[in-house]
Length: 505
Image (cartoon, rainbow, N blue to C red; front, side):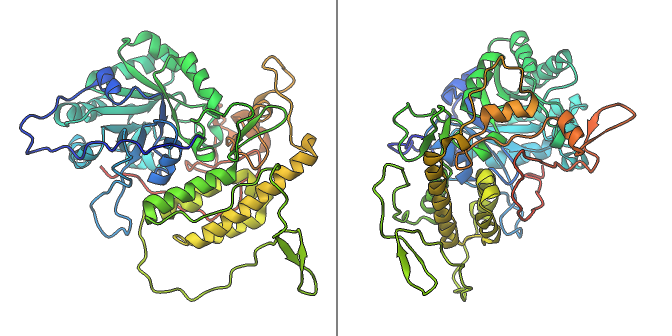
């Protein structure tokens, strides 16, 4: 991930809605898409995972528009929704709503219109909470309501309206669905190549052929974003070629690998942030991304200087002799690294508590980023699980633990590369199939950012994680509508947190 040499230009301030005697022309469709730079990389909205810091990581090196769900005030006391972010950096920015009432949708959209470039209607959420609330993908049978929701904003809002939806049971039905959404006034459509029932263990693969079918049968000026099956950077071009889409949206793939939109550096130019193995496979180091994450917290959330840290480790660095461990008699043994002792409980100063959604999201973000690492280093997992919101000193300590772990991993690789190097997979090799083939292609050593890979539905059935319904022979999750995830590498234990609806509209 290349360091941005200069900050992006600050966009114009909020649009004046009453005092401007000559309001600017409202752009729609491809004309609007060109006005925001015709981006190819789009960061998806996710409940409790769309904070400013999260979408700033990929945006540091790539011009990447992102979707921002709205939410209630942080303390829960007020009813006024807020947008988290930095106005100087948050562009292009789309704000996504869940809605099922046209007038409520319009009223809410008017609140955010001065601070974003477009408003998006969520027609893709497949979770049980969306079914209970009658929104997201559970509106897809009510075409009249969807038309009214989009058309009301198209006619009344000063900025464009877009929509994100899932494919239906056939390509022909999906095409008619897309035509209806576009006829209502949607300027851009984002198509997730999975059906509504594909979630949790039944997520399976997205079907890019549906998106290609829309591309081939909709007017050429239609702007389409493709979503689904983006596990690493190479998948982006594959998706664009296969679907003919204008851009690619990443959701879960970006959580585990925030560098997914960044071009890998040339061989020999890896530096301290990128690692490449002897088999040519590589990725951005977790300690490097962790550092960048904290740096954004310091600059834009806490508004404090970034602390000075030692350069990240490289095997070519001269041997340091300033680290030591204590022997049984309490003396230090020169040349060894010191494991930091557990922190003693300190009396907390009664300082003013900083209330910011980015601080509350840190633990969840880092668990997803560090999943393979904390599966091996359970001491880091346990320390991260106990970290308190806003305790930046503790997160700095966790960063140092991660840096030491990455250093140890790289040194082990230098001595025993065969323990880590997986052979390059031949696309025509039939000896591997299903998840095993995916793991062989995408897995990296545990200190490198890498995708989260679920077992395919039929594999989950064999594992006993799912059962087959006798009535319709469909693969389902027997527990509930709540998404349950299972990684190839067992996920770290961490406190669960009930996710909330992003918007009540």
